[in-house]
Length: 421
Image (tube, one colour):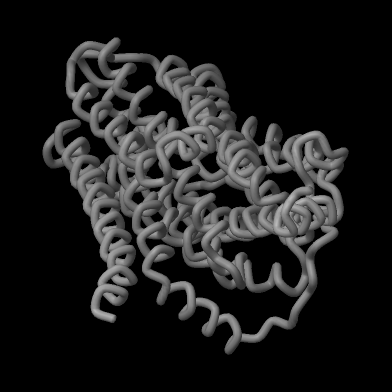
């Protein structure tokens, strides 16, 4: 006869009506959020591969043009928490749909911007609109998918981000080379519109969401609770630092590749972002990495891979630079998938707010990385940008080591108490 605990576990598992691999709605959910992630990242970073062309048209420096990226990510970071609170009232599905719809509508206006200032303003509005997606998507998955399948489901959403970032840059690069950067942005807007239609058609209605009132006091209390959790705070910092590296590298890499000794055309520079496919694989593999190495082990592997890529990218060989970008991309997406899924599993209440705080930190890191990376590039060339990345990598290592030390101390306390008794 199996023990009572085993019977209870089996009963609870069979009573769990949340989605798992093989369930009818699991594939639809995964594909829908994959499409949403694809559209979101394609829109959010649509100007990144075009920065040299934008600089040329408006006579702007790299640091000035980089604000077309930083304004979008910064606005997203500022708006993600209040919009996640609205998702508690109106539902994750409704919030994600509204977010993507407004972002696509703004995307169709972006190519018409008459000057750099209006382009930056429209991009900030677009980033604010997209703020309704990330935290709502994480919360939707945490509520609708079984815990054992959560990392894989979030990994697929992050994979959609990586493919969206890649395809958006490739499309804008080649279209811009033939018809200009405005046409490139219009192409991304139209492609994202198709993704939003697919998302809305595929995503099942939420079965485990319970609406609640939008209460500022409750929101402040939830934020305080999450920020008082040392593990969550460390995960927020790790996400921000990983994104600082990624934002710095991919904001500046276009400028480096169009200059000597590479002197690549715009279309080829856009195609460099094919390395995002590595990010897709790394995100999807994050669950297996955690299973084999543990969360901290997976983070150490991700950060080591990122650092190796940064150092390799210092070479003047195009092959070495591409190899460096592959390592940076793999390390970043693996680290991001581990950290973001850990937030969803760690938070026991107000999951949308927990995910929103992570997304705020994550995109503030992107905004800071893009701006600091461009300033460093202007001051010291690519080596300056790499230095910014290495400092952020060192920060991830320090935070993770501190977490390991804190875990060992916490584990020894019961033993010491028992010994004293």
